[in-house]
Image 1: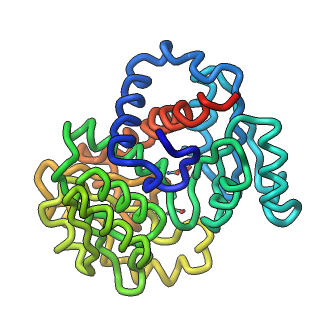
Image 2: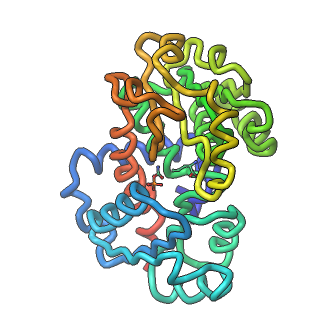
Length: 308
Ligand code: CP
Ligand code: NVA
């Protein structure tokens, strides 16, 4: 891995993403073999938003590699308020061997990576969620045995998760259709970047308004919450706008017969997905959640093994 930080999936080449999957699968198969891979190294976990999966998988993941984690809550650091991002970076690089951050503005992780001499891993920003996409495509690979040429349809808000799924799809040759209401499309720059990257792999990236059209022929149907963390005030308004984008049994029927259902979680049964879909045999949501652990261990290993 050439990159020294992992801020977006675009930091990695196609080959590096596939290599990361290979390492993740080896780690999943034989945990003991990697028990001292990051012996004695510490990862600081900065959280400015809540988390179940990200916190648990980074915490457990670094321990399984022989290292330690340090949880820093929003109350503790208060990035940019109690202390500048620059000063936090300059302190932490003297004390730990890696930083994972979950925050609001993407620029904060970009700045942290610029200032800190140690690896910075994006654990979700308003703009992207690269660790999620790595775990998701690893999960798709496990279930479908291949990636290139598959079709993933993401139904819902053109948010951080949608961006990362487009970036990774473009790199991996997976066709990604985003089906979203007008006004909730993915960021225009992100879409253009995915389209540019897709030229190399032949992936088709498109944004449509109709979920029924979008899921046609899909191997994977994916959705996420209608109001992301930080958008709580818009929740009621979004609930009515996104109602036609609910992934239910009827919509799933329009995808391929053997389509899998995915969701980054947390999920709201009855809103973006019905209980019969998320709890069905087609659903692989807990495989995705588990694969956060394996994919991130592979990312941490490649970035942090170099740090003294
Ligand atoms: N999918 C995901 O990132 O979950 P958490 O918000 O619980 O970390
Ligand atoms: N889009 C969601 C993802 C949660 C993992 C959010 O940002 O809240």
